[in-house]
Amino acid sequence: MEHLNETGNPPELHLFNRIPEGLADTAVRDLPSVLPGPSLIHVRGRREPPLFLSILLHGNETTGFLALQQLLRTLELKSRPSPRSFLLFVGNVRAAGKGLRRLYGEPDYNRIWNGGTLPEHELARKVLDHVALHRPFAAVDIHNNTGKNPHYACINDTAPSFVHLARRFSKTIVYFTEPHEVISMALSRLCPSATLECGLSGDRHGTSHVHDYLLHCLTMEIDEIFRPPSNRNKEIYHTIAKITVPENTILTFCGDGRPNSGVCLRRDIEELNFTFLQEGTVLGFSDRGGQPLRIVDNAGKEVTEKYLRVANGEIVTRTPIIPSMFTRDQTVIRQDCFGYIMEPWEIESGISR
Ligand SMILES: [Zn+2]
Image (cartoon, rainbow, N blue to C red; front, side, top):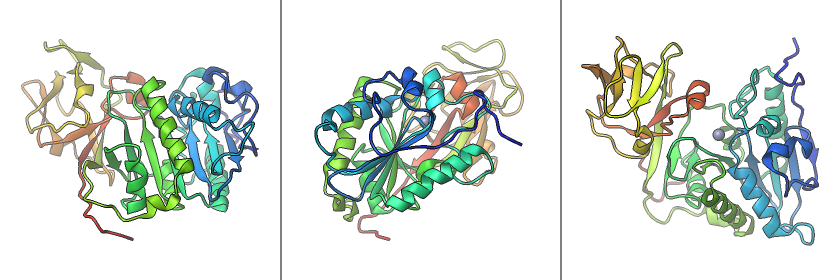
């Protein structure tokens, strides 16, 4: 059966061998008038191998796109070559045109990279085939969060080159292996790869941070990232579990007082991201029996009881945790998750593989 999404057409991959006219100046909402759909753009520069770059896998996460536009202005590609070749994948163009993470009826574009039977899986396979053919030295995928988080970089492998690539963006690094259907995981089988999490979408500081990072990636000596780490790495966190809200649960965010009904999380819940929470920290209130939140570890096993308990209507941590991506955005909570639990990850200097 043909898969149809909101627009009625299965997505196709469009190939370009230069920056399409208008891309550098268009507003993200008007992107579908410049690109006909998901596009892979190959720009040849002075040096090889290329950098791989992906943006807008989530249509409402615009920082990568805005940073790219700024980069195109800096590079002045109309009058001179890029310092290094790059492959640019622009993901969910249609969702970007509507300011949405994804369209109704289509899969999340950052969960299609590990095989499957939908047209979007075929699209992902084609992109990966092209990437493999052109052997990039590194790959960078750019995202935003909705909750309050520092800028940080994620890696799916702790080899030194991955850590270097991530460290150039932020001292805070998150190592994760689930969800495993993300593009960075597929890319990490081809080259060092990092996901940049650049705070809130469109924030000007995030845009210039990513611009500077990409410019550095295109101009640096690439063996920079293949050196062994010079000292012990700090602030690497490992994602160990994901928190979701059960579908039938009505979730709100409250002040100091207890709610009358349902599950109510602390109003300042986003402030807890990347902080160390002691055992016994109150996350919110619940008037119902059972667990108001659901926590699943990387193996897919339910581990809610290990981390949370409900006592006298309070939702309390049962063990020390470091949360990330806690968000108050109900759409993200429903379409993805409420947040993650991390633990510190030690990488000793001098490891290599
Ligand atoms: Zn994203």
